[in-house]
Amino acid sequence: APAAGAGAATSAELALNAQDKALKKKAQESAEEWAGEPYTLETCAASGRPIEVKGTPQTVRFAGRELKFCCKGCADFVKKNPDKFLGKVDEQLIAQQKPIYPTDKCLVAGTLLTKNGKDTGTDVMVGNRLFRVCCGRCAAKVKAEPAKYAAQLDAMVLERAKKAYPMETCIVNPKRKLDAKAKATVIAGRPVMTCCSGCMRKVRSKPMDYIPAIDAAIARARKEAAPGAAGSKAGSKG
Image (tube, rainbow, N blue to C red):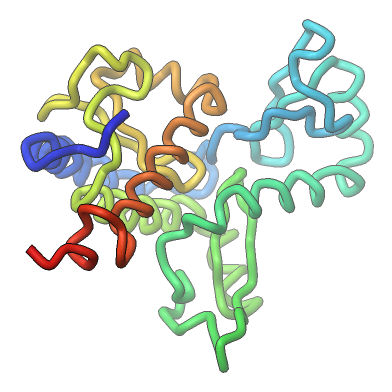
């Protein structure tokens, strides 16, 4: 979808502002109530093969997170040997979310996660969501209150989206323009907007059907906004 113009951006901002109450409520949830993020990999958490390869995909909640498998056998195997597989899943989720992580500061202490140009941060994965902190103590706080810190990340992502959400139509139904009634959320660190709650449920149910399109739109918007890009403020002298 093309980058949103001024009118679409205003509609998106109205919709995103409507999420503030939900974000504040989310911040008050306990760690036990936080469901975490959907599983956003396209491969089985055990075998690494496409989830649909056998035609019997399994979605399982285990160790406080959602996982998907190509078959019941793989699901049972991971339950018996979690340490062997969950670390690999975390590595893939971190690689997916880190490039669009919304801050370069520790989520708890607020300190910069770079020193002499090097990344000094610690990656913490809770409920399929990446949190970046400066030390073990801050990591422990995130693990104790993931809902609180997930809401903080969501607020950062949605605040950024207010200024430049890269799509002007619903990610599920491209024929529907986003307006002040649009629904907004954050999935795997991405801002996601749909025309209605029904479409939002579809995104959360099968996020990888839609995340690639969101990533492509974000990449296009960044390229167009880059210094020297045709039409960008930085590259235009007019």
